[in-house]
Image 1 (cartoon, rainbow, N blue to C red):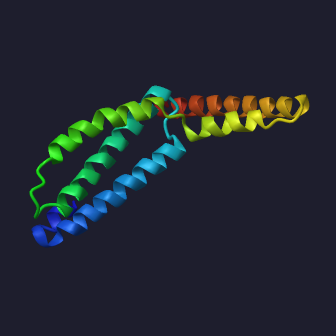
Image 2 (image 1 turned 45 degrees about the vertical axis):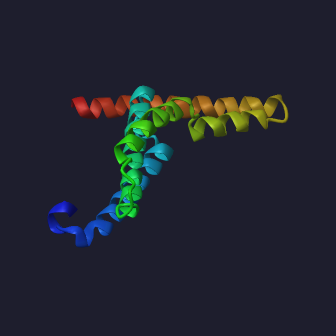
Length: 139
């Protein structure tokens, strides 16, 4: 929409700024909230958002260096995408990290038992939410 309302080179920096802000907000929001229950879909969505953020970052680099002899924007995108995919595959989700740190900080068996009950309750509620969401979509 912005491209239609802000034509020309006068607004190029505004467009790049909006794209960078929007893509970074989208990436971090989806990374933290994990809106999809399916892990494969969540991973695919994180990869897509990360690539979108990378492409917009390269656009900012190219805009900054447009009056120099730099002409490697496409190569930079091509080199960055496989690295982003590898990073997203092997990066642990912050919630999983928090769970493992929390579990390691248990002082005795009672703490571990209470924490495991809490996790079981949370997982059970998640399954109920998934089922109710599926029923709402069908009905």
